[in-house]
Length: 166
Image (cartoon, rainbow, N blue to C red; front, side, top):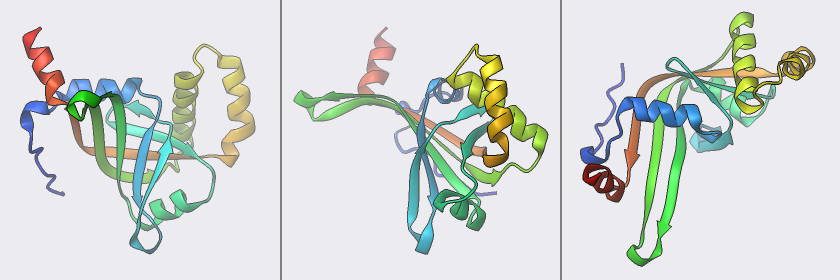
């Protein structure tokens, strides 16, 4: 198993439950892969968090899929908050980075469950429409899973101080 770096500024580390909450509530993030020619490939993408895993949907082919097939290591970053503070030349941020192994879901039951969870997250309460979308589009869609091995959430020191003074 890979040894992941400890965060240097430990006071700014978010508890795992807050980091998971950010992953559950956020609507998009950036998936980072090893792309063509060894260049990093980072792509904005929608996601859903389920019990230590992130699920994404994708077209059947493309740069992202080629990268996943060539290297199973990936990271996914979500920015929860980013308030620019011009007078102090900083931002009051909260972000999460998940590291892990990424793969294309081959199991049809898992693929269907992930597609439903994605649909429920982005268009809740429309079960009939979701069912029609899944029936017409599941064969033309890949579902991708990132098994999280390491999770780091961080917030600006100003937010830590504010939290501690509350």
